[in-house]
Length: 65
Image 1 (cartoon, helix red, strand yellow):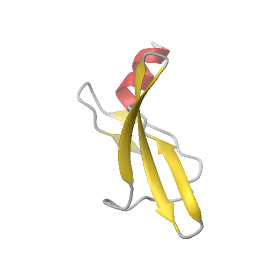
Image 2 (cartoon, rainbow, N blue to C red):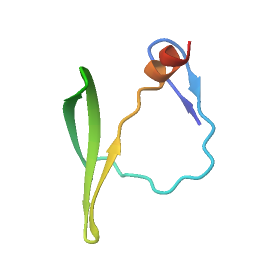
Image 3 (cartoon, helix red, strand yellow):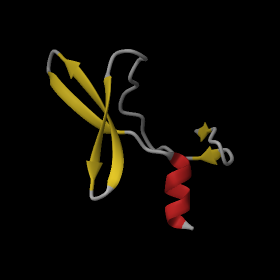
């Protein structure tokens, strides 16, 4: 999977896609955690709710550099 970022395209190797979240089917929320702003997607389904952290590929690359 290649994601476009402001800095440059980022390639991610994905072993297995568990599910895809359709646009508009989840609530985006932000919170502070240890001085860092974190974005979360909250998906409500009949079986319960699931929370997914939104990753910024460019920020992940900066951490590894």
